[in-house]
Image 1: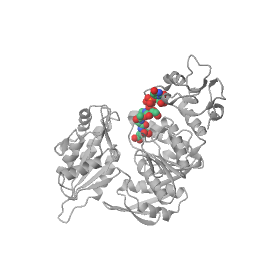
Image 2: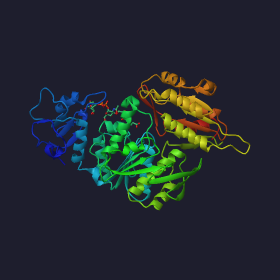
Image 3: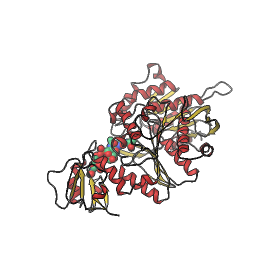
Image 4: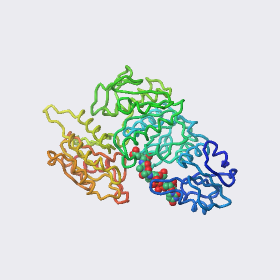
Length: 494
Ligand SMILES: CC(=O)N[C@H]1[C@@H](OP(=O)(O)OP(=O)(O)OC[C@H]2O[C@@H](n3ccc(=O)[nH]c3=O)[C@H](O)[C@@H]2O)O[C@H](CO)[C@@H](O)[C@@H]1O[C@H](C)C(=O)N[C@@H](C)C(=O)N[C@H](CCC(=O)O)C(=O)O
């Protein structure tokens, strides 16, 4: 349905306009390659490219209107121009009007935090489907419209894509949508104009400092999401995290909390944690879950709190939750015939790696003969991303494993051996003997399998659900779970 520019701009503060504000807009885009007759092209200053340099191209392709932060020196008569302070933010507000506020017609819940976003969003999605609702999911692993899986390239897509997906979700009869909110998305205004029914904060540790510059900026980015929540929403935070309460400062939303350690609206306690699952007490009820590890205890508590805040009955929520298995690539187990336990996990930050290894340490029990399973960790660090974490991750792997194999993650455009040398700098001298460096990830996994004895645990960390490995700009098929299965078979263990 075409809409007039005037109608689309009613919430946007304008600095200047020229041309007719009655122009009919049939398509909204921030990418000149998608502009055509009827388009409103929004020029956004990116970190690498400046969208303003594509204004001429958009006009040549027939764009009817241009929204930008700096008007071009020469303008074209038939084209309408709008100048604003922040075009990315304006795009969010315009997209909400253009698509007729789909976020308001759904219960949209966003999840932010360094770790746990995918698990919490995916568990909520699965839980609500189990409770009988049609649901949508926007996550790092995939987007989903109820049964239909849609591949994704970002944790949080751009605001036009989000609105288009929300429309499709509404058309498919969805009532609830669960989405990850990355700090990049907040800073780049990819969530501008969305009306959330709730926001969840999981935790924050050092990550993405390459993008945000300082830890304070990173905290502010996460908080930006909570600041955007409306009065009608809930703001659910993990108060066991040092910054949990910071998220709630200044938010107008209803303040709620969860904790395993202190007073909170939703309080839990871990009674037992084993390779077979978690036993927890939540709000005076005792429940067994199929998920493993203390970090999942936090994820489950966040999901439980959010579900109750969305109006679901506590008992029913816990019953459904107790049947759920881990999301893909999140502590996913691949077990060999000789009982070597492979664990594939997306942990790609120091904190996440430490959590996973501590969890493994807590659940590895010796057999009757007193043999304690050894932990063999295969880990790498991505290229063209935060380099400071490389030695730290190697150090953590050494501290909490019996053997460590450093290998490539997604080197992207960096030299894989240069990344590995930076990781090696973090190996404590006493641990040199237990550490190997094998650049090829497949060989590294195979070597781990060759080193393992029955009941030993191999952690393959960093890539989780990913089905590719990116080397020098080329994406090759690669799936840690498949490679592990092949290695078990090749080593005669399957
Ligand atoms: C560093 C970063 O976040 N970059 C994002 C940013 O790119 P950019 O600033 O370089 O912009 P650009 O793509 O060069 O172009 C600038 C503008 O010119 C326009 N353009 C460009 C070319 C052209 O021919 N015509 C044209 O109009 C573009 O549409 C855009 O509006 O804006 C683009 C459009 O939204 C994003 O696709 C891109 O994500 C890149 C691919 C990326 O890898 N981002 C990662 C770091 C990211 O966002 N990650 C977070 C998750 C983090 C986590 O928690 O792990 C995520 O939410 O996915």
